[in-house]
Image 1 (tube, rainbow over the protein chains, first blue to last red):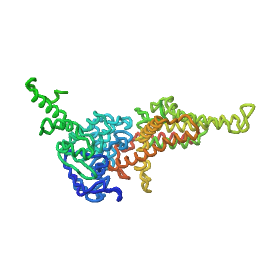
Image 2 (image 1 turned 60 degrees about the horizontal axis):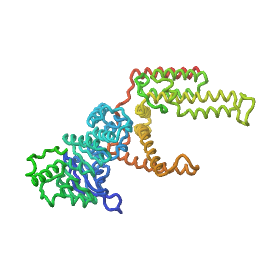
Image 3 (image 1 turned 135 degrees about the vertical axis):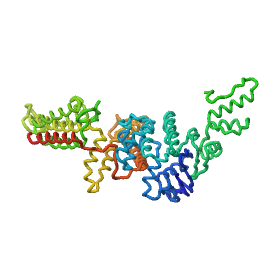
Image 4 (image 1 turned 45 degrees about the vertical axis):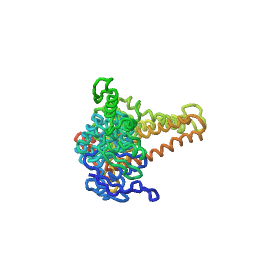
Length: 290
Length: 260
């Protein structure tokens, strides 16, 4: 469990705090999406999770290890892996396998264990067979998968994705997110910073940040349905939520509608109830509008 | 086209030899080459050819790999030919510029020495991957740890420098194209204009390198990096075959050095 207590952080004393009195708990196997406009404090917050930044005030504890204690920092970084936006700047090895071996090498694991972890991590991200490839010959999506493999080889309990999918094409995004779904089932917690509302819909929990503070923290469906709050924080609500809100004055709707399938089903129901006499009595099935 | 000393993955006794043996052999050969006479150079060329064939690398491929330094060889040759005093080949001279027999001999001799040095180094890099070479440097420098110099840090520096060469080349091309799109002209203009053009690439490239290094340091720290000792995917281990190779190469080097 990651426990953040009264966390505040200032970059410079003459500037307003980048984080102000943050209290947060991240449990095992949770998939959390962290959202907020630029400058809201998301990146500063996640850099505290693996001791890249240390609190100006308050505490960050990862599985009981306080990040302020320098003896704990390497273990915290092993437990909390981080994938950054630009994979080019996180690949250090001259070959794919060497890059994946960098983390376990830092943990001073024996070579046999390093090789086992490299093999497993590459299998997990689907890069088996790429071991000897030179990283710069990989595509952007493959590089990001390599960065992910480098982190998985450290066998972390928590994975932080810092806008790691923002530069990927839809297929690359889907691949990374599918791997995340698989890792969740193994009890690994995912903390995903993104601006993409569709990605946020996959989360168990969405945290909204603004001015260095947590403005909302709740189930994805509750937070993402609140268009007003999202707009106030400089975020665009999910397009489906926006679309359905246009129907609201005409069709009173209590249902939570976040996905294309849910929206299509609801629209079909409305159409059917209005013109039921003119249409056959068919029912809507997921995917039938595809 | 082959770049200077670019690694060629092949299955050969030279490729599978421990990189430390190869690195030490090249260092020793280089010292010997600098002290050789003409006969010695011919013998050494034969030895390099033999190793090249043993490594499944054709002599043409090996020679072609030196193409980037041919201009340098040509310049060196002409400097020796034109500026060495001696007996003139032609019945006239242009002041101090004269083609002499001694100059021709020295030109061929010195260029051959440099060519053999480059061929030896190329043979090393063509049969040893950059990561093996880095590992060899790391292991050979380990004794320096007793005086507080970390071979792990040196190896990491070498490996990162090699790793980032293509990335920075790409970055430079991107900046160049961006400047061209904004009307920069790198081929024409006065010397002052050319210097300005170079600055227009160098300044953003430097900023980009600094930004990249910041992000890289952060990513390395996030992956638990701490200066000093670390472990590797593979540890180099001397086998019987490597001792055997070391013995043969030492014998060849001593023989060449002694008899020529």
